[in-house]
Each structure stands twice: as structure tokens, then as C-alpha cells.
Amino acid sequence: MTEIPVLTIDGPSGSGKGTVAARVADSLGWHILDSGALYRLTGLAALKAGVDYDDHAAVAEIARHLPVRFEADRVYLDDEDVSLEIRTETAGNNASRVAAIPEVRAALLEWQRSYARPPGLVADGRDMGTVVFPGARVKIFLEASAGERARRRYKQLKDKGMDVNLAGLIAEIEERDQRDRNRKVAPLVPADDALVIDSTSKTIDEVVDLVLQAVRKALPHV
Ligand SMILES: Nc1ncnc2c1ncn2[C@@H]1O[C@H](COP(=O)(O)OP(=O)(O)OP(=O)(O)O)[C@@H](O)[C@H]1O
Ligand SMILES: Nc1ccn([C@H]2C[C@H](O)[C@@H](COP(=O)(O)O)O2)c(=O)n1
Image 1 (cartoon, rainbow, N blue to C red):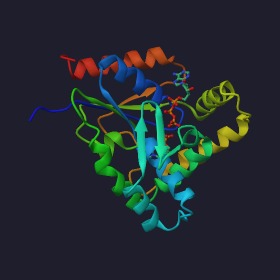
Image 2: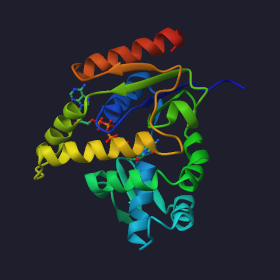
Image 3: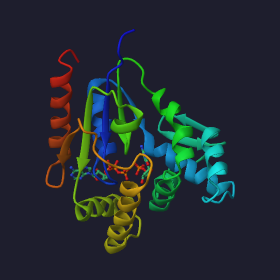
Image 4: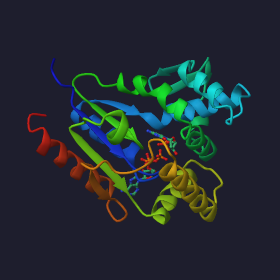
């Protein structure tokens, strides 16, 4: 069977994974997996169903049967458009909480793997290179300082007209980092064979170029 090439991009919140993954996937003509969205949807669906995050079996059951529909750039839970709601900082924090539940991670594993389709996949998240696609041909771990990531998020939210506070964002980012890096299952760590890129003082274009160089070095035919 022909191998489907996979590029994984892991890293903490605000390091630029989603932006870089979209640009690289566009440039290569590959599919994209935003795995964080699945955890965000699970957190939101559990909240809407009134399920307590401490009830791990019930949250995992929700993850297994997420009533989700992706349509162009919109995402629906049942028939409700939740595209904006899953992008809030609260939804990100709730995602980080349900993502620490081993049964939830197990429930989402095969679904994430099913995104690998020809001609290739760019997968972004926290454990793409370590757990979901350990055999990926190219693995990137994107870093940036917490202060820079909070400044990026501040600008992103301000540009959307939202009322935000930089100190609050730094505290939230540090809390989420702490939970994602220290959980027992699939913690946020670079895979042993990942190329680590610190984007703190790099532009998006510079990071995209470095990632594309790594892909072309590993896969000269793409
Ligand atoms: N190298 C960079 N320089 C400046 N801004 C950047 C850079 N990379 C990303 N950004 C901006 O930072 C913000 C956050 O980026 P993005 O959403 O891609 O991060 P992320 O790692 O996917 O975050 P999350 O895990 O929370 O979804 C966006 O507004 C994006 O345009
Ligand atoms: N592969 C993944 C993707 C996401 N998560 C968790 C941890 C994050 O804090 C949260 C939201 O992710 P984001 O949309 O900000 O990338 O979901 C994870 O544990 N594993």
C-alpha cells in the first residue's frame, strides 16, 4: 500500500500551529487536521449536555458520539453553528480540561487517524508526533515564549473587537501550558525526532518557509 505522508505540527497555545498548518497544507495541497477543534467540541458538547467534567466516562461517551458536522469553514454541533463559540479562551481552557481525561483521548484517537488521506495530511495539536502519528515523516514542534504568545492572542482578539486584558491572557496561557505539559496521558512534549522551531522572533512567513524546507528535505518528490 502507498504510504500517505503526514506532517505533524505540535506546540503550545498561540505558538502559531494553526496558522502555519493552514499555510503549509495550502502550499502542498494536503488535507488538514485541527485536532484541538475536536477537544474544543467535546468540552462544549459536554457543557451543553450538563455533563460534569469529573464524570470521565460520560465525557468520553460524548467524545465517541459527537454530533458534529463540518461544512466549508463552519462547524455545527447538532444543528447549532458553534464556529465562533469553540474559538473562545473559555472553550480552549475547557478543551484542555477534557483533554486530560485518558478515556477522551482514546475515544478521539482513531477518528484523528482517519484524516490521513492522499495526497497527504498536515496535523496540528499537542500529541500529533508522539501519539497519533508516531510514524509521521516530518515532525515540527513550534515554540514561542508565553509573553509573545499572549501578545499574539491579545492582538487576534482585539482585531475581532473583543475586550481583552493582556495580564489575564498571560495567566490563562500559563495555566493551560501547565495542564497540557504535565498531564499523565499524551503530555505536550516534542517527539524525539521533531524539529523544534522557536517562533518568538520569527514572522509567519519565516516559519512557513522553515517547515516547507523540512518537508522537501524529507520528501523531495512533493
Ligand atoms: N510567527 C508569528 N508571528 C506573529 N504572529 C503570529 C505568528 N504565528 C502566529 N501568529 C499569530 O498568532 C495568533 C495565534 O496563532 P494560531 O492560532 O495559529 O496559534 P495556535 O498555536 O494554533 O494556537 P491554539 O493552539 O490556541 O489554537 C494568530 O493571530 C496568528 O496570526
Ligand atoms: N492534539 C491535541 C489538541 C488539543 N489538545 C487540547 C489541549 C489544548 O489546550 C486544547 C485546545 O487546543 P487548541 O485548539 O488550542 O490547539 O485541546 C490536546 O490535548 N491534544
